[in-house]
Structures are given as C-alpha cells and as structure tokens.
Length: 486
Image (cartoon, rainbow, N blue to C red; front, side):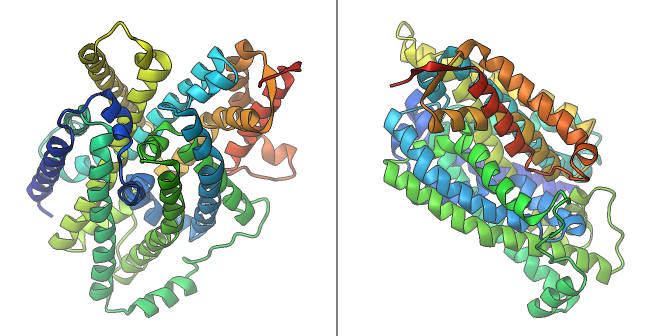
C-alpha cells in the first residue's frame, strides 16, 4: 500500500476531529474541560466508551495474541462484566454522593493528605504508562509503513501524533472527547466488520467454515483448566473483574466521562450497557485474530516476529488497498479514542489532586484556564518521553505487558479503596506512601519466585489482586484500632 495514501488518511481524519473540537469547545471553561458541565447524554458516553475501553491495544494486540493464547482472553472479558457491576452499584453512587471532580479526593476525605496524594500519584503513573503503550502501537505502525519510507525518525512521528491530539483536545477536554469518542467507536467497529468480510471473500470460505477451521486448529479454545497455568480460567475471570474495577472504576480517565453524565442513574445505565456490549465486541476481535492466522496459513504467509505486527502486515501488504485504508482508519480511531481522554484525565488529576486548582479562589477563571493549558502540555511531554523509552524495550505483545504493569501500579489503588469502603477504621495516614511502595515490591518478589515457593504456580494477571491484598494488609497493620471515621 502506498504510504502517501496512509499519510493523507491520517491528516484527513485528524482534520475531522479538529472540526468536532471547534463545534464542542466554544466557550469551554474548566468545568466543561473537567466534567463537560455534567451535561453529557449517557447513550453517547456509553457508545463512545466502547472505543476508549478497547483502544489500539484491542485492535492490534488481541487479534495477534490469539496465536499463542487462543480465545482464553474471553474469560477475562466475562470478568469485565462482573467488574462493571461493582462499579455501577458500589463506586458510582459514592462518587456522585460526594460530588467529586477527581475521584481521588475521596481518599483525602476518608484517610487524609498522604493517602490522597498517593492514590493520585499511582493513577498518574498507571495511566501515563498505559496510555503511552496504547499510543506506541499506532505510532509504530505509522513508523513502519509511512515514516520509515521518507526518512522521518521515530521521535518526530511521536511528536506529530501528540501535537495533533493536543490541538483538538486541550481546550474542550471531556466536553469534546465525549463526542469524538462516539465518532471513533463507529470507525473502529465498522473497520473490523469490513475486514472480516474481506478475509472471507479472499479465502473463499464461509463464516461457518472459518469457525470450524479455527476450532479444529485449537485457535478458539476458551478454557485453560490447568490451575498452575498463568491463563487458568478462574484466574482469568477474577483478573478481568479486578482489572475492570481498577482500570475503569478507580481510573480518573474512565470515571471522568461517567461523572460528566447528568445524573447517577444515567451514569449507571452507561456502565451496565458498556459491560454487556464489550462481550460480543471482544469476541469479534478474537474471531478476527483466528481469521488472520487462518488467512496467513491459507496463503503461506510467514508470521512476523512480534504478534502485534501480524494484523498491520496483512492489512497493508496482502489484503489490498481498500482493506489497508479501512484498517488504518480503524486503527487511528482506536488510538485517538484512548489517547485524548488519557491526557485530559492526567491533566485533571494534576490540576485537582496536586495543585488544588478548584480551591484557588485568588485566581481568575482566565488564569486558571491558562494554568490548565500549561499542565496539559506538560502531561503531553511526559507521554512523549514514555513512548520513546518504550520503543527501545518493546519485545512482546503490548496487551500482555500492559496488564502486567497494571498489576503493579493499580494494586495500591485497589487496596486503598477496598479498605476505605469495607472498613470504618482510621489509619496512620503518613505511612500510606510506604505501604503503597512496599506492596508492589513484595508482589514482584513473590511473582518471580512463585514456581519455587508455590508448587509450580505461575502468576498471570491476578498479580493485581495479590498487590491489592498486600496493600490492604498493610493498611490494616497501620490502622488506629480505637478510632473510627464517622
């Protein structure tokens, strides 16, 4: 596929988003940036969050992952639904009751200053890494199929991508992103359906024949029944449940969109709808992955070194120009959908949790907006550095690395919120940062030696649960037995 076509598509798509931004960001102040003035229609939020939840990781990494893990990821997705129910009926009522802008201010009210800053810090680290990984996937495709051909270095490609995201999101924030997410979800899902149809036509097989072939070759196996295996189905289910609780329910990025809804009831409708929608959508991406491997086998195409490169390699080099265009539109839609909201959420957390922007009564609205602009560009700079560093070490499927790192960085958040919601005990707040650092360290040591210590047991994504339990135990140790919060 001609790389000039890819570049034109990229620029044209970005121009469409700029147009949406101009329409939605007019007269947008900090309230619109942070919470969309709490006027976002819940069906729009729910539909747009499909794209934000999936991102470029789902679009590329999950199909490529089928070759090594079959459909075992589906048990994680079933766990997602359980997690969304917890968010719907436990966390959202709490956030709306306290009228929060940043969800980490709950930790300030429940425990104190250090707990608040620790929770916000771990979110910033978690989302910074997660968003950078997701963006890396797309930028790397651009680099391989466009910019390498014209001699543009990787860091310049990263800079261009982040510049375009910043230009359309820095003013309107959530007010803009709610609507651009809806547009991007549409492009991403449409791309998937079109490419599945193209594969079926080019191979000459029917949908039912492909399903049977995937089953015969073991590509569609869902349950791993060996309890020692890192993809044991119960581990996958409960890992998915807690991944959703922390990466959605305890994540400012995802919750900021829910808090922009008009009421708690609307936000709950959004969460439940999203939970059920994601099951068939993820199943389709897994099926797409099986089709990619069957297509490669049918035409004798060698697999690339990294599984994440399988989909783009086939789309650009084997499916034809039209399929390449469709793939790229879906890819950049998925990338933009997660990247813009992540930068906005990180800016919100830095503004509210560390600089107390809402409480600076001595600053006029205009000065507050200017300060928020500076923070937005600062966060973008951190994302740029993280992506460039990640490009130097990437050697595996991004989704596997993403969930593994999430287990270490989101674990303290899980422990903090779980202790706060399940106990009325007060704690020695000044020791919370120490607990939040020690828990991931102990978790890492145990995971590295688990086969020796636990009769061959290998940790998978349930590292997150272990980390949360260690944090919870640490908080119990530093509790004040004679004092209770009211």
